[in-house]
Image (cartoon, rainbow, N blue to C red; front, side, top):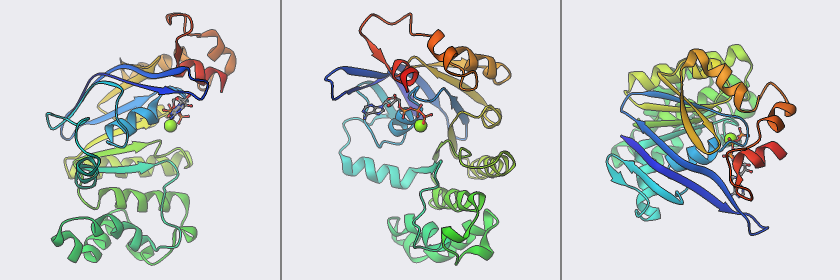
Length: 268
Ligand SMILES: Nc1ncnc2c1ncn2[C@@H]1O[C@H](COP(=O)(O)OP(=O)(O)OP(=O)(O)O)[C@@H](O)[C@H]1O
Ligand SMILES: [Mg+2]
């Protein structure tokens, strides 16, 4: 369904230097698969997710959706494809504060097909029920707990039955138990609807739910066996090992003067 070949993403900094965030990413995601990407802060995970979600465009390389290169699609076609086929879950939920849970979940259906539009309330209620929140449908997000807000966000992401679900640190703002429950639910609903799920996370417990895990380091993806993901992640930088490890793992392989996202992360 999704195929990346040699994808790079470079941004021009205000200092007029180029920052090479992604430096040749290869990745295939098949229908119904759950893939996790782990990596230290600043390694380029959100940048990658924005490419997968057709929010951003790669600098070079190919990104195929259903076998078709996406870079030359117009913004409108990309937006349409995103709306019909991709659901997003973010760390900070991104719910509309003044709208009820139900209105939040109905929102994507306003832009759907005529059939989806007319049935929007019923469909959204079914989805809220699916995440166990039918009885909170008329509450605004401010009155819901973090875990409940993320379940509303999951319902919103899935209400148009996307074939691809992209989750950026979906458990990042939740405590461990709540995070596990939300992640379990996301995984289960994705499986039920045979959607592919790409989860981006710091959290190795979350990554362990996936069928395949990758480590994003120095702008490229590396296969990791979930059982060894912890060691692999610590070796890159130590999200938990602290700043000495970050400094110690310097980008020795990079040419002098060539800035990578890892460098930027190390300074952060
Ligand atoms: N448009 C941009 N302009 C300049 N720098 C950018 C831009 N986008 C991303 N970066 C930098 O690229 C690096 C990777 O950013 P990204 O947000 O992808 O990291 P991340 O892995 O998602 O980090 P975190 O785990 O903290 O969310 C960071 O150092 C960031 O500051
Ligand atoms: Mg990020």
